Image (tube, rainbow over all chains, first blue to last red):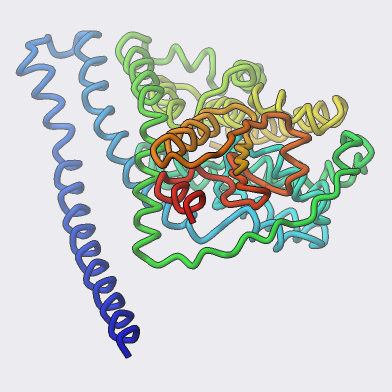
Length: 354
Length: 77
């Protein structure tokens, strides 16, 4: 009897904690929105009023951009990471693996690419994840679709693109990213390169470790989201500020239209160059986006900029080095080659149609 | 007690190891901590995400940095 009361008592307590959290959350969103609306005015005032920098000067433009963009991006990041953290609490690599095992090729590629967006993924997990998928009977091509979409279509990138450049750009990014992940994965699957996996992997007998499924309550999910915010923003904020500083410099000091000549539509080589610049660079998506915003503002073509952004996030040298443990060089080469081609195609496509 | 922390060496994995060491010191439990960075060994434990923590052969957590309270619960039960 007493255990029943305690249980009921706990349930009631959880419900009131939840109600409190929801109320605070709603109040937080309203407050966030109010502050967000004031940002342009405040940054103008700070630059020209408080710091008395002359309007229209390069320095003024840069500083205003920086003061406006930094809190703006940080606030967006906060909201996006929290929201996506909650979505991600519904997905685990184990569930994804179980779901994908044995799926037929094209359906598998599509699901894998979609799941790559929402399943939590850290670059250092790439190898165990790869092994886990392969030994669970997930076809090689399907596994690659996942591995391509996970780092490239990043919820942070999508959220920031949406906030900074509008939903159309965000949707294009997600759509083309998915397209590349699905088709590249499918192509790799067709090439029948299973024998290019390092031998020890196929010999490893990975019995699935049965992790008991944590039953998460909504409170747990909020905590998960909040933890994600602390962890990701804690890790990323300095790159974001650096990215914004670079963007501010471009915004203030690079002449209008100069980007049009380097990364513009006219030059046929702008897309491959953008991809090449992106490959050795590895940044998390958050740092790259302010740069993207500034480049676009200076006349760079959307296709080239998208290509740049995708190659920075999808083809990362550290990840290739890690994958070398499980993949023979030729398979890595094919992986890089197919993804690069996909990105090139997307870049050209958008430069032509937009 | 034998604790293994699996991770190839990224920030999260090092943080996990550090947390485990701290909890052991705080609770005074007699346990050895081994950090495993070799991919082949990590794979042999059947986990898909790093960091992972294994206590006396049982996988306690995988794919995220555990909280101190969680670690404490595993080693003092």
